[in-house]
Image (tube, rainbow, N blue to C red):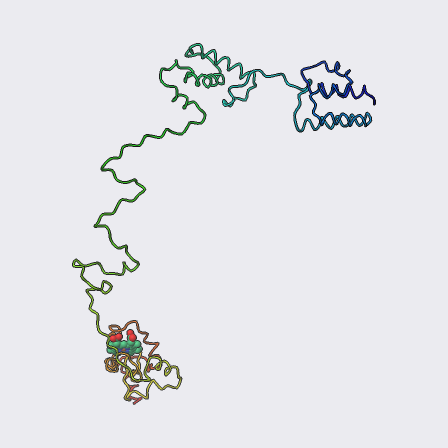
Length: 339
Ligand code: HEM
């Protein structure tokens, strides 16, 4: 393509860069590249592209132009005579009102608001809710109240009430410190001298209540119960509880004795008869204490001294028989026959 084609291409881009000028075809006659570089608002890169289009054919020029149009729409918007919207002269002033109406309506309401600002508002006037709200919004900046007469007071409070987001409350001035007033509530009150005590420990519940004198050296021991001295005896070597346990574990221990009329001492406990003679040297309370129950029932003595002791666990191997009444004639005859 020759110079006329390059000139028409330059005119096309020049017309795109100047949307207000509708007479684009008049510039298409300019074929001087110098005029294009000096008069057109195209950048140097654009002119470089124009130079490159001279070396290509018609199809190449068209494709480059389309690519440049695409780049221009993606990077920097350029105004065009065909798609440019009409210029907006008025700037919307009610952008914070939240009204989604068009710009013309906003401008109209703004003008109405200005008229209402000039004229005193009439009470009971019929207006639409949206226009009323916009008027109140518009007039609140100057007069403070929309429908009420112009107030004589300060308009700061009315502006605060009509704003969509109320400002934070005004900090109250601090009161003068009162002489008898205590410290702030977050700080615990200072304890008095009488309330300063040692914090209670975990063993506080086990202690006896303090006496009035408060001179007791040990509060763990109860003061009303007398502590009895241990009546345990020193056992002979080889007669410890473990030795007794070892002896009872032997099946042929012979702990039941040799017969009713032997030297062994028997006692009864819960309806059963036990031979207590083998256990006498092992009894922690001594032989004498154990033989206090010989020939009779030992349940009461046993329960008074050590009810926690497992009788059957210790004397199970010393069981002689079941206790029966001596007054039963059949039993008496049977026992005599055994003798
Ligand atoms: C029947 C009359 C009995 C009397 C009067 C008697 C008396 C006593 C006495 C005074 C003590 C010493 C308590 C102390 O001061 O710690 C004692 C301890 C003991 N007795 Fe007897 N006892 C009798 C029967 C028995 C029997 C039949 C057994 C076994 C079944 C037995 C097993 C024990 C044991 C294991 C202890 C040691 C308790 C301990 O370590 O806390 N006692 N006995």
